[in-house]
Length: 106
Image (tube, rainbow, N blue to C red; front, side, top):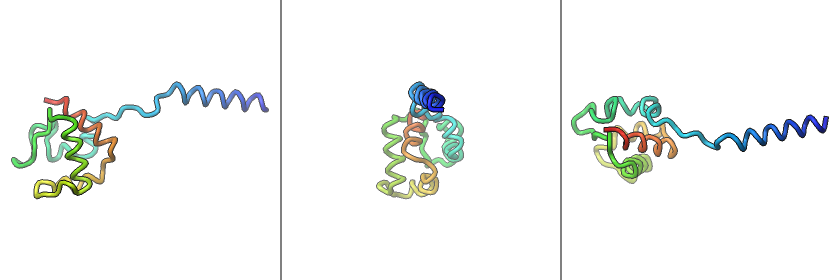
């Protein structure tokens, strides 16, 4: 029995070491799942309203900072009202993945 438990422990440890801790998040899937496309368009370059920003190709650090500022309330103007309603849907890791994805679009 002790031998079997040792084998099981070794197998679990080996699997944990061989598996990456966190798989990279899919920014494209998040963009759809978190409803970003509803206001910013399917590829981030054709917003629903003329005063909504085109976010495709924007600098990743800038997009990330803006989303975090809107979520925290640090950025709070008339243009943030719609975003405030959805920012609770994303965590910091997802914000980073979205920003990276958007920065690579044209």
